[in-house]
Image: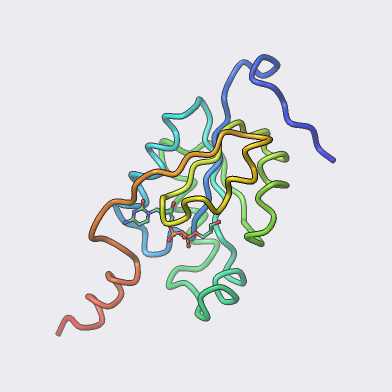
Length: 142
Ligand code: C2G
């Protein structure tokens, strides 16, 4: 079992967040930038294509490799990895030595059980924008 480095041992605070980040938009950017403000280093778990297929019944518009490439290129992001399962959050927090887990408030309360190993923060979503709404808007534009 990996052990979690303490802040005193590493001298920095690692933040972790998760998402699909499909058809990347400003709501995604803002949650990532705000997550980064909780520490000195931001690690992002990008949902696997398979996870999306299981969870939402469809593949993302952009492939896992493309979504990883986009998120990794952001100034606020230090490291990316593939999130294979929603149930592995505890393992990912420990593996990446994260002291803070940040999620949008559509996930409010869902990860409170991890409060024994890290601080858990839910941030308000950016209103009126979502990947689903963007896809529908593009599809209905003549
Ligand atoms: N988000 C936001 N504002 C929006 C849209 C999204 O703040 N208008 C946030 C979400 O709350 C989430 C992040 O952007 O924190 C990524 O959103 P999604 O790509 O929709 O991620 P999701 O499929 O919910 O994550 O372990 C979680 C999984 O990886 C799935």
